[in-house]
Structures are given as structure tokens and as C-alpha cells.
Length: 474
Image 1 (cartoon, rainbow, N blue to C red):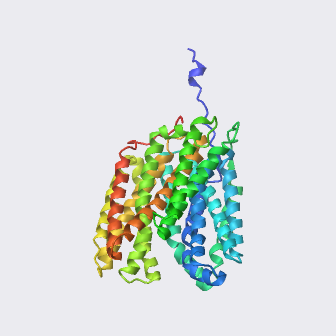
Image 2: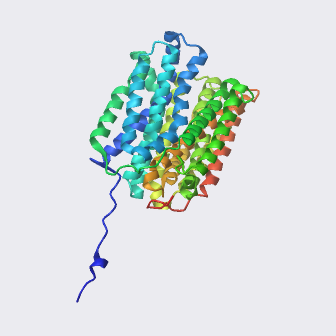
């Protein structure tokens, strides 16, 4: 009896694009980076008063200390993700960490406002490279759906905790040491992450060689995203009708339209538009955009509501955010546990319903109401619901994508998150300001946010019932 050897031969599994000394190290690097980059989005807020007095900044200059980071971060995420595909995930993570560390060091040495704003923009550039590369590391290293969901959940949780603790850590550093330490604290943390990346991670494949770089497309999408974020950020100061708002918004939209036209024609586009043919990518990004548009403005609106209507001090308002942030962590954990068992749709639908219920409850808060009943409980509900959406949406947006496009997929969903949040704050803050009283403005804006998160639930119906385990064709 003979056996055909060709039928018994088992092909070797493909070589993973990254190797590490252990899954714990991959998680530690990715989560540490996520914590740090979102910590920096809020850590300077409580130090602004001291910074203004020390450097003699105007109110507009203070706004740019915050906005410079957010603009660079939001505007360059897509380019950062694509660069990881073109030049290597590990290599670009190293570049992002070095830029972030150097900018943080220089920012702490700032002697004037322009210096500090430039350093904050440099931090944003570094963060825009770090965010998509760390997510791409998780999606390429953890191929098992259950492990991937848990890893993405941990990555999101680290970012939420960083955002929640930013103001608290910034206040402690400013009071106990000096405002410059809100920037210098990133240096030792960044160096530890850099050492872990250099020692513990290595790429096993060379990035795909490409015949050219889509310079026109890169310039159009980067400038377009920056201008749209700038226009959205300007609404709180100048309103929607001001040329300072309309000019960057319209110019940004025009550049993004031009970007799509460019990508359709060039041979090597920086964002191949066929990636949106993947149901996972299109549906996951839609849900992420809408969920962030409904949730991130709550930090802005709730902070003002608690101080203007309930008479909270800034410290009390900051502490009141902790239940919201940690309920998002609880929801993220629940979403990551449910995703491998029931698929992405049920946790996203349930999360949208729970978050909307919490926001409607918040919209009913009366003047002089009870904080535990009218704020704390609905805030926890909202956080659990939003958290339950985040992990399935992110996992869906990055599922089924070919490994050589993992950075692009990560950049897209990070951009959807940032853009959703920026536009949500702009729209809801303007809507709240249109009412006669502060209380009416805030509560009606929360009701509108409930409608937006329900739209995220509607978008969740377009997601597949189960996520693909392998890489997709596009």
C-alpha cells in the first residue's frame, strides 16, 4: 500500500509579521503608549493657569497650547498608519516614540508661548504615529479572535484611564513640582516604551516595496484633515458663521474631495479606496465615528453643566468624571468578553441602547437636582454603553484586512474616533449655546447626543454577524 506524499504534506503556517519576547510585552508596550498619548490630551488643562502666568500667554495662546496637540494628532493619524505599512510597524513606532520624547523634553524647557505651542504640536505628531502603530501591532500579533478582542479591550481601557487621570496627574505635578513636569513626565515613560520596543520586538518581514509615494494624496489628506479639525475647534470661540470657522472647514472639505479624486487616479494611492469595500472596515468606522461624536462631547458638556448649574468646583467636577471613565472601562471589558461569543452586533446594539438611556436620563436633570440620582447613575449607564461599543467597533474596523494594510486600517479607525469627537464637540457645544439658559442648553445637547448614539446603533446593523478570522483581499 502506497501513500501519496503530496496529500500528507502540511504547509507551514505563515510567518507572523512581528515577533516578541512574550504577549505580555506586546500588551505592555501598546497599552503604555495608549495611556500616555491620551493622558497628554488632558494633562495640561489644569496647568494652563500657571502656564499663562509664567509665560505671559493670552487666552488665545492658551487655547493653542491645547489645540496644537489635538490638531496634529487628529490630522496626521491616517498618514501615521499608512507609514507603518510602508516602512514597518516597529520602525515607525520607534520614530513616533522618539519624536514624542524629544518634543516633551523641549516643551518642558519652553521660554515663551510659541516654543511651547510648537512642542505640543510635535507631541501630537509623535502621538499620531504611535496610536495606529500600537493598534496595528495588536491586530497583527494577536490573530486569535478571542485574544485579539481582549488585547484591543486592554488598549482602549488604557487610553480611557489615561484620559481620566490626565487632569488629576497634571494638577498634582503642577502643585507639587512645576508645570513643566506635565511635559517632562513623558520622557522617562517614553524611554521605557522605547527600550521595550527596541529590545522586545522585531519585524520578521520587510515591508512591501512600493514603486512610488503618493505625495499629492498625502499632502491633500493631511492638510484637509488638519483644516477640518481646526475649523471644528474654532466654533467654540468664533461660532459657525465666522470666516475663522468657515474658511478652514470649507478648504478642508475641498481638499478631502480632491484627495478622493487623486486616490482614484494614482497607481500607488496612500489610501487605496477599495479597502472600504470590506464590510468590516466601512461599518466599524461608521460606528466608531458616531459613538465618539456622542460620547466625547459629554466630557465638555458635563464639566460645564456641573460647574454652571450644580455649582461644583473645578476639582469636584474633575473627580465627578472618574465614575464615567471607569464605567467606560467596565463596558469595554464586557464588550471584549461578548465579542468572540456573539459577534460584534449584539454588544454594539446593546451599548447604544444603554448609552442613549443614560443620556436621556441626564437630559432630565433639574436645576438643583440630586447628583447621585440625576448625574451619577445616568453617567455610569452612559459609560457602560459607550464602552461596550468601543471594542467591537474597533475590532470590526480592523478585521479581515490584509496584513500589509493593518497600519492603514488602524489609522482609519483612529481618525474616525478623533474626527467624531472633534465634530461632536463643535456641533453639540454650538447647539447648547443657542438656548437662553445654560441648564436648558446642556440638557438639550445631551438629548441630541442620545440621538447620535442611537444612530451608531443603526450603523451597527451593517456590521457582519461574525468577524472573519483571516485577512481579507483588499
